[in-house]
Length: 200
Image (tube, rainbow, N blue to C red; front, side, top):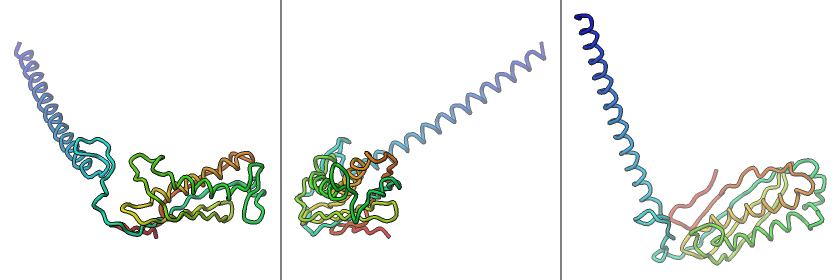
């Protein structure tokens, strides 16, 4: 009986200890979750595209000054040897027409319609959009430079222009081979806003 009583007491102590540890762990977990939710709420308040209720909203730029805005973006498309064999001079000829010239037109059209493609982007009247495509080895390098006088930046226009030009290169070259890789699309620089940016 004494042995049984000792065993029972030991089990009771273990249960109490386990419950205490579990409650402590639970309390610690809830404390961490609470702080994470607070940090998330704080971060959401910093998002300019969210209103006070967390709903998506276009940023009001009415009070901003009109400045000269510029941006430059780049996309790199890697083509295989079979496709590069069709490169004559500075372009690739296909049954659809010259690849790079068509890509320049497509990229320019897309840059002008960025507000229709990217949610909550402002409608901007671009004053200039210039796309240049060069080759380096098996890479077709697309650079899109845009500018305007406005109250908000034009980096999305530059990125969309470069991206769609790269996609057009893919579309027009896939008849030769699908071994095509759009390796990167990145912003190179932007000027005219509160914070300028230039990639080293």
